[in-house]
Length: 137
Image (cartoon, rainbow, N blue to C red; front, side):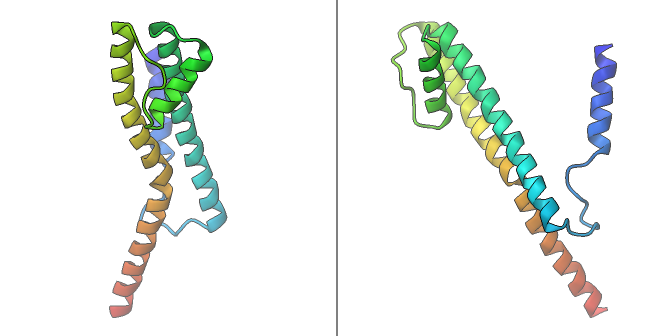
């Protein structure tokens, strides 16, 4: 049952592409802005998910209160470094793995955020290239 639901989701994602093919026309600017906002929402969701993992982890492993856990997770995710002194071994291990995860989450967030902009730039460059080839024929 779970696998069939997962299969339906993957089929839907595969059939519903997020970006137009290079042979298709350039997306109109208002729709491009909507796409940028949608990708911004995706990156915001990734940041919220990473903050949730960090907040819960610091609360349970480092035994910090919720506000201090959120603050510490935010500082690590932003690349500023830990805010609280960790005393237990399990808290230090969690903090190490969360710092590694935060680096990957940061890179993923930047990649998601700039995907529509980079795609549009490459699409425009390809359109110019196709127009140049057609004019030489």
